Image (tube, rainbow, N blue to C red):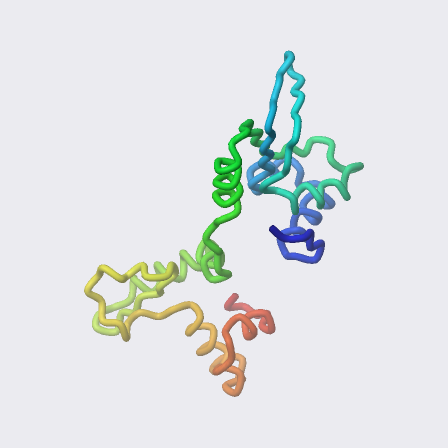
Length: 186
């Protein structure tokens, strides 16, 4: 599917978590490794697998291999699938590697600050009340005037122009603005 990229954000985060000793939560924050083998035999707690391949988690495996001397108390979710049907193997590969991409703003929407900000917006007085669309399309089925719905991206641009006194940068892609700003409102 793809080669190992040690500089990807996810791989850097795995490295960082293990390096800083955040080992106990690793199992909860990582999707783990999926292996498909043509043959599996078990004797007690020991498994013998033949003709196997890692179909998901190759990046994780590569990062952890480089950290082998630091992996005490690191648990990794692991799925072992035994099949000799090529079509099923292909389905497993596609299924375990076909996730919807998660946008930065979707992760940002989970932050407690954003939840508090959304509540602050909805507590506003009518007719001036605005709604912070923390999650994409969250007000899609509601009869709210579209001009009263504020997206975080637009809020970043407005705050940059007004409070950081940089209106010239407000037209940029909000992700570039956000990475360049450190301040009390983020």
